[in-house]
Amino acid sequence: MRYFRPARVYVKEEALKYELTDEMVARFNESGIPVEMVKRVRSTFDGTPREQFFEAKRTLVLGVRKKTPLQGCRPSANWQLPFVSGCPGHCHYCYLNTSFGPRPYVRVYVNVDEILAHAEEYIEVRRPMVTIFEGSSTSDPVPLEHWTGSLSRAIEHFAKHPYGRFRIATKYDNVEPFLGLDHRGHTRIRFTVNSKRVVGSWDKATASLSRRLAAAKKIAQAGYPFGFLLGPIVMYEGWENEYVDLVTSIADTFTSEERSRMSLELITHRFTPKAKSIIESVYSDTDLPMDEGERVWRYGQFGYGKWMYPRDAYDAVKQVVQGAIGRMLPQAKVMYLV
Ligand code: SF4
Image 1 (cartoon, rainbow, N blue to C red):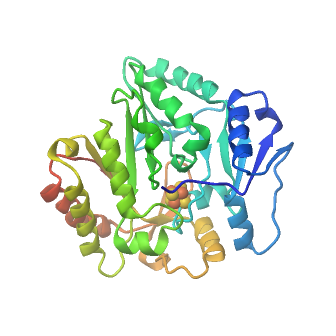
Image 2 (cartoon, rainbow, N blue to C red):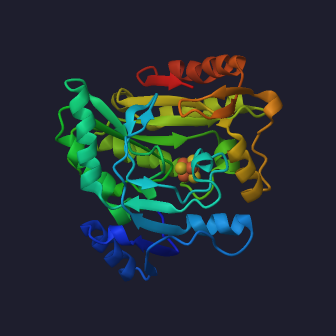
């Protein structure tokens, strides 16, 4: 099983009054991981930009999530609800490269009850309509769950809620903490998967594709609504056959009943100028396609621009990937293609 073991843990002063901090510090002490109380997190490590980036990703910070307005999360949910930000993974194309920059510490928010109470205010505004919260918009929180337990708390919280729903997405297989929970079908757990070339070349420090599929099978057998994010879909030479193979592997893993609980989200590759400059300095040997000449410039929901595939590429994805889904996974629901 692939999960995160930090090299060091910094505990910020404001986190000290929360019970989860004590619980986590006890776990780190037992595991021999050094813990330091700090007023501010050191802003740099020694070494090259790559070494500093890697050290930051091995550093866990326990802090408190301030009560600021929740951000929207189209098209997968109504609102973002992070319990973690940052990720120990090293996917070259990672969307976090734009938001976290050159020192991507992994941060855990220990005020879980306050975060859930904040979500309650947003549910009240929309009720009796259901409000959906995304727990993976600023991180992959699953490789930290055995330290934090915060996703499990959220799953049990939303299980009892008539108007709140939760969802998470992951590239890890550390799903054991979720299997025995009373989720009542209110949390959807999705696995981000990709073609052989993408997983082999540009997904690093994550679980292998076969382990993600095996973890998804366990989640399906535990009765959760579940699904797959196919993304980022990268259009390299020969992409068509490899994405059809991916859909075939998914179809072969699940029963017809399980497929009827499956959602599929299709996300094409895009990058920002900031992400490209970080990728080129940290993963300097990458051959991830990022040629602006083959892309079009568009502004997204958070106001910054990115390089996306042109319109005809979406038509090709629709034809190849959605076509394969229609043939092999007719019971699954395609939520969107972006
Ligand atoms: Fe980024 Fe997800 Fe990879 Fe983590 S697993 S590095 S969040 S793309």
